Length: 77
Image (cartoon, rainbow, N blue to C red; front, side, top):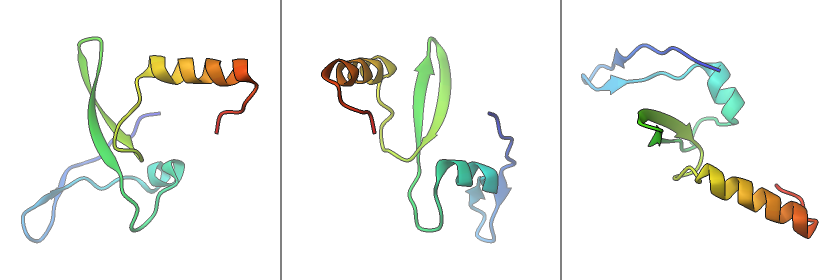
């Protein structure tokens, strides 16, 4: 899914990026929650990722962990 946002400026002159309510609801976040904006590369393309965790795990690590949990008979959370 893709969202388009427009950079705005507050009264102090700081730039802000308002996030759509639908996006915040999908992330399950509300007032007082923390979000992280991380830089990731897909091949040579620079991407910005908005996450609820400070670091996005490497996709291979996630797949291996999932596979190990299935082999051990445990559930992923």
